[in-house]
Image (cartoon, one colour):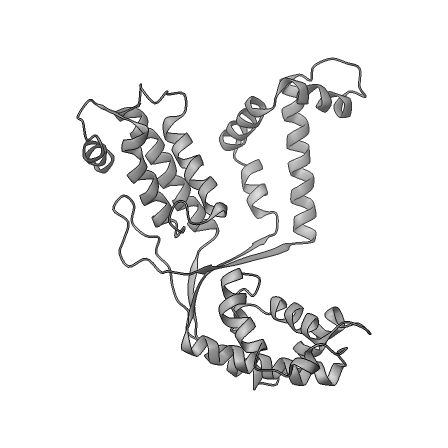
Length: 309
């Protein structure tokens, strides 16, 4: 069994339990399999490593360690969670090398898209630099642009491209015609920067239209499991606050059955709202250093790179 053989590999002292130190390689490999930067290099990712370690070591002191059965149970949950997550939010790995951005700038799509952006970011006294920076942040991978809010992209792609524009003009208020012209020049320079130093982006898309909530409400086993989990996690003091909404503040602690009934009604209302007004959600994350090898603990998730548009 994979989990058992991995446990033996990690159990360096052979005492049948994994200490926090022995668990560190497993947690690092989980992060690598998820495409996270190395532990300690990104505050945004470090909390995920901490949560993974907490899942393994929950309820156990450093001296006691984690048993074989506990390790297998947590590892199984993580694998199932990754599989479910990839099914709901498939990850696409994109190589942004300037080609798609150059095609966008030279296509009939550019002017109407740029004009629409100017109507949102332009104002009578806003300097051109401010408008251009706001504009590139509104362009996405479908335009061939990496996420411009990423500090690495700003420093290594956007700022060098801005330096090729006229400094004096950048500080002047932006008119529509000047904005369209200078944005085209800026994006052309960005495309050149990307050609010299391409960017790898992990991209996900999802549309929330209520079908997931409908499936949950139709599966009594999964719904009851979720409601039980939520109820266990609600602190006693918050249950009193929930009562004020449920029972007009009569001072009693809210009953479990009533709480679950209200939560089910809320889920039903959310389902109806989403079915009438679906929400589209996408994320793009720069992968600065693509992994050179697969994780030793978990296989890297299968991804697809679509052809350039």
